[in-house]
Image 1 (cartoon, one colour):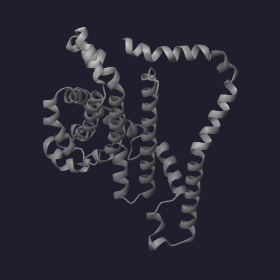
Image 2 (cartoon, helix red, strand yellow):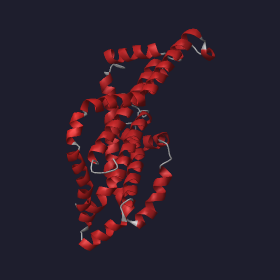
Image 3 (cartoon, helix red, strand yellow):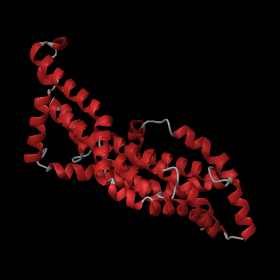
Image 4 (tube, helix red, strand yellow):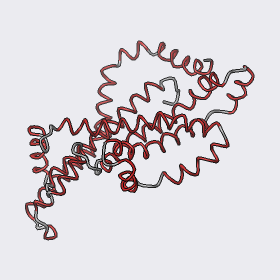
Length: 293
């Protein structure tokens, strides 16, 4: 396509002209990257370490609000609980199976939301009637928390896997469809005029004119849906789950195993960050032709 070549050509020329200088400065650029990493994340790491040390100090020196220390947890207790989970699993199930259960539910729910939400969002963006019909409904459903769906979903679908996936799907599809609709609305009007002048079919118009400029917003919606879907998995696993990180958090709270609950929260946060940065990397590779990226 002509417009994508216009984006790619300056980048290729710049890469060709800068080739020798890049090879000569590889070591210095690596040093700068490491330095920038420490500048960006160093203060956060120091703050976390100081917070953990203060937490441990308070537990050993102060009777915090009269609450027994075993109900507050501790950094040392969290580390011990993590080691135990790695070695022995939780409730007879290896830790990796709890990971796999939560990740598979999230990916399945978000995948289903992608299959339905992207075409739905494209239709909303391209068709004024669908926009007027469905946009208010999506705007109404988006603020509803995942927990609010659980009683109804249990009545509809029971407590099996389909109910957990449905809760994730209902949350994710709203972000996916919104991202796709916003992407279509971001397509310059000149592109539509060019498509009419060239006599493109509807499929060619969608594939060559609409999707390329709309792709950044579509991917942003997918990224948001993935991270939100991963957060919602905790609520989804309140529905009769026997495996998963959300189940581990819920069950540990019922038996007052606070440190194991903290481990579950920590692992959900780590995987969520991995999802975020992993998808951003994929997004940047896929959108390499964009000058602004």
